[in-house]
Length: 185
View 1: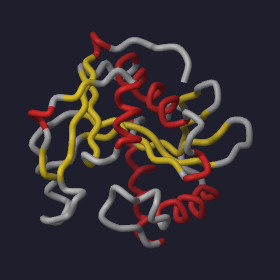
View 2: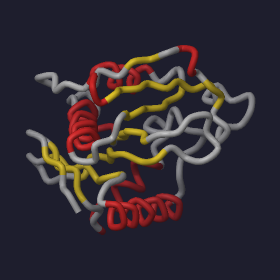
View 3: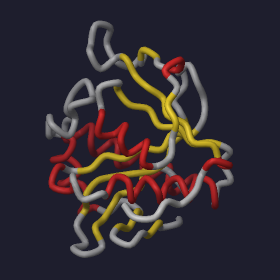
């Protein structure tokens, strides 16, 4: 199972010690602002089991993210095939961090590592990212990663209830030939 390393982060397998901060992160309504609900402890535990099973089976997926300086769990980032029932297919890159980790450039740094892995190791032709239309912080990360947005691909997420302001979603894409490693965070 590959571990991805950056200057300040390690994207790695999940550990038992990650569970409590993961549960707390998913119970935080600010972290979950662009999701329909916060998660229960049971839902968070189940997600870690799925994430680690995917990492064990495929060698890639949603990694736990650790800050090198402190060894602290700060969130997750990775790659996952787009779920069935969506209007598009491919492999999605994503990230989510605990609030104390916001504003340090970690999402962009982790995103760059994930995208590089997708192209350099997995030889994927394209990576995409999806978020609610109003999630400007995540969209800014997508743009820093060099992803492009086409408003013609906006869609209503079938997993979000009708009438929810979170239902309208955007897709950003990055093709392998357009990928470059920008410097800095």
